[in-house]
Length: 222
Image 1 (spheres, rainbow, N blue to C red):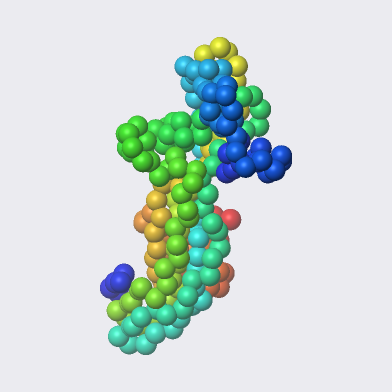
Image 2 (cartoon, rainbow, N blue to C red):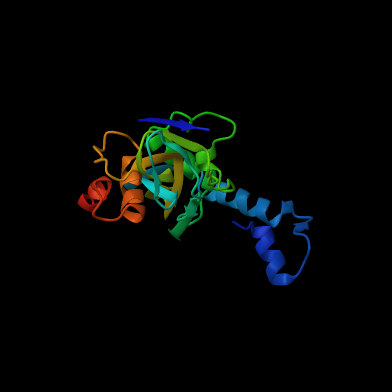
């Protein structure tokens, strides 16, 4: 079968609480800049320890199943959103450390080759938007009952950052390494040979039904 694809800053928080429009003073820049410098001084020359790293394919959208006859055709059902990916660092205790540096460290830990390079690195960008859901861009060459879906490879991990002065910060980081889309045919048993087949099996469970052959992999993983 042929498939063709056609956080608020410290300044902002202060403004909300006090009603002031700006956060500069004569002591050296904005409140956010001073906080960043303080964190850098308190936690310089530290090291990260990562644990409980969980990497998995997560559905971001799925369409209702669509039956096509001989010759196939376009999949016209729109995707319904299921999950909005986020890039963030949260802290449980200790001083807050730089979020971008934390996410770059996680990227390096999981072996992302872009993690140690310079310039923009989407995995570490806490301001990046989630990928959009694209509908009506897929056609299939063959008969069957099909489900269109989209997914991201999400990474969640806990960390401990030990500062150069011995203080420790503990928290969790979340982001995603890649996003994609796919099509699953309800009567086809999946082999888990492709990276997105965990997402495909979950899409089949939701749209084809839990007893469909394509959803068997999702049932085994539950």
